[in-house]
Length: 230
View 1: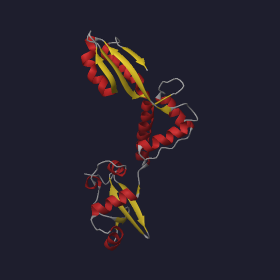
View 2: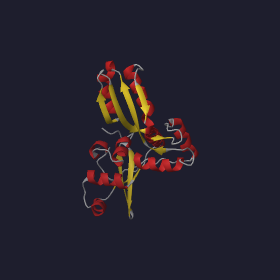
View 3: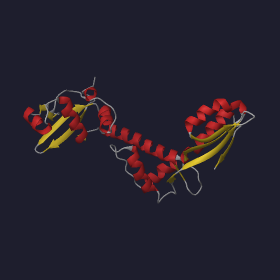
């Protein structure tokens, strides 16, 4: 049940008419950015308003003429998807921080410094974004904004997306257990079992995940594996 105290307004202006619905902020934001959310689960009141604060309902004739339907759920979804979502300052801050983290994480996992062939720490990427004065958009997808951020920070730090191939040899006592974890972490390009029971593989992964991969292998083998960046 959506609480009226926590609901926010989604507003759409069409000509001289204004249409508003009261919705759950988190659910509405999720639906607006393309997640699988049902309108009936996020609508606080099954009514369309001309002014939700005043409790003034939109005229049925205006709703029908504008949306070609009087079904509240259909109308509410159109208002939400094509209109403006009135998030509170706190909600905007929280969502913006989460989206910023997602963008930084994606870049950190997939990009490297081409001069050193090593990943950039998250803090360095974040600092470069601050220096470049990058503005994250609440409603744009992470993939779209990653490209915008990369373009903005390239003049500040050397960075590019790249995949790397790593050869790894795992001793026999750890080989069987390690196979599944390694193949889940990275793409297996080559692999073969040696006569002594050890396992040799060449794997491919986003360049930014190199250190995580080495950490995984060391954990699986208690530091007793061999690896080489190709």
